[in-house]
Image (spheres, rainbow, N blue to C red):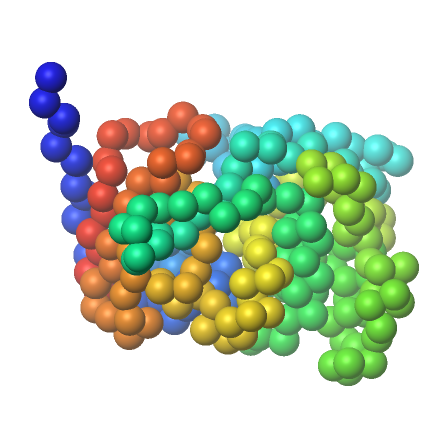
Length: 239
């Protein structure tokens, strides 16, 4: 039986996103939000037909203390993926874990980016203090003691809020809380989100390209464990 030809989708956007960093994407940036959704698995998602909050990386979301404490149980079959130019293969680097959630949440709260929707996270205990603190003024120990995002084990994470908030699951769908790999950002600095360096956890993985390229090619993640919408295996994007 011959191997089916890959199904290719071609998409054009009038403007390229300023970055593939989820914390730098504004809510009205269509290209940026589409690409973040293709490259990263969020903690939760919104069903397009009903608006209901759906599990994603967080397979279970449980409220406690009247909605002031939220415990997330994460999937253990989601991996950081990257295209290896030496082997021309998409390779799994490691599993996405609760550490990646803590790192992303802490980074988001410390963000001073103008377009970042960080204020939505101020409901998280300690987030506003992190945001207002001078860089380097808080030790890691102090941050760990005050910050309301706590690692319990590789697949369990706990959010403590400043007040009960029944709407908190909707915040978990925001790109700014997308889990990120600390070691990549620490080693690559501001260039970590370039197509030739970025790690992906979503349904697609980017092929290497220059940061200012007018085209970007995404290839289906071979380790994607969720049901795939459609049968597209390659997405060619132009700006």
